[in-house]
Length: 65
Image (cartoon, rainbow, N blue to C red; front, side):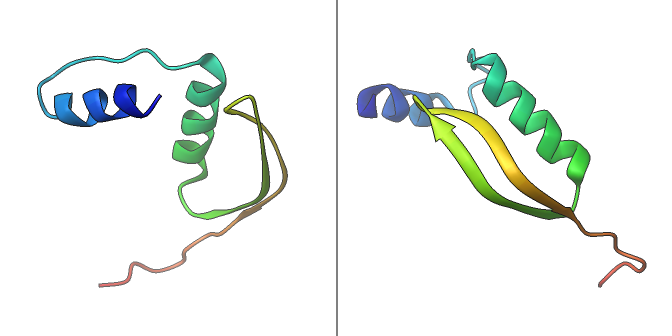
């Protein structure tokens, strides 16, 4: 596993695509849609995100500079 991660890190920026598990894809898309917020008690099983028991969404009403 460590060698695989080292290989992936070494390949970053070279335009290579990697395959990820659908559970990770769903979690990443959820985070993108959340924009701002907190995920508490994230459950990981067999190296995959399983569930988040509590999700808090934060809404910004102004843009910080």
